[in-house]
Length: 284
Image 1 (spheres, rainbow, N blue to C red):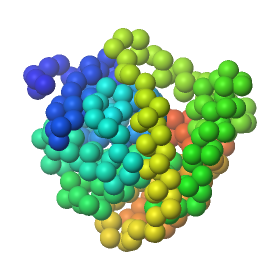
Image 2: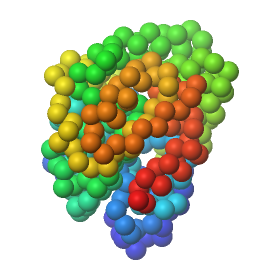
Image 3: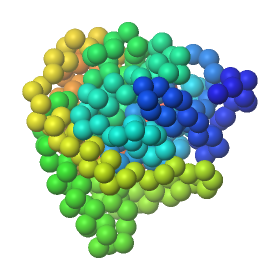
Image 4: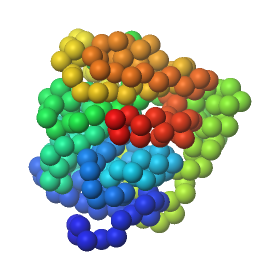
């Protein structure tokens, strides 16, 4: 991990590196300038490094050091995937500290937004600002149904010979279908040194963790004093959009962005607008 390496400006070209901590070899990629508070990306159910939208990553990396990583037991990271969001949060903190970082901004999407909520409450001094998208609070409306919805849409996708994310992340309107195809196309732009797909065992462990999160008692989010940008599409089927409004109400310093005719992957459908808003929020 040489700090003298040239700055990488494109996620497509970011090399996959590893850092060892807590008995786990964490796979990660980083790009952007080496200065300032880095933005750590905390990812969604079943995702590996290749599942981040390169337009979002590159847009943020034009101004910030951006770091994406594989959770324990996922993709190229070693170890066994935890079955609770709290353990995943502890792993993320272990990874962040292994890189020698003492202050970060977090961008958590979906399950990553749940993980980020735990991090900001358990390690408040580690986080400067928080961006959470397509996510919900502990005990949030409909979160316990994620497994059922994921299974149904996976079957729908198989029957339609499509990627499940086309159904799970996007609306079934003309705009949603087009945005889904464009997003899935962008995920294939990286041709070399792609990550390993998630194993079925790890995927099932993540589903259990999300299910448990959906059944938990609501957390006291008033203790979170950090600035938080909360975003989603207006028609999220996976983690109902009502949860996004709930988070914005319960966080003391929040800003809410809802994208029209958009689902769970609203920040990917409206990637240009989202990057602009995120950069403005982080620069404040």
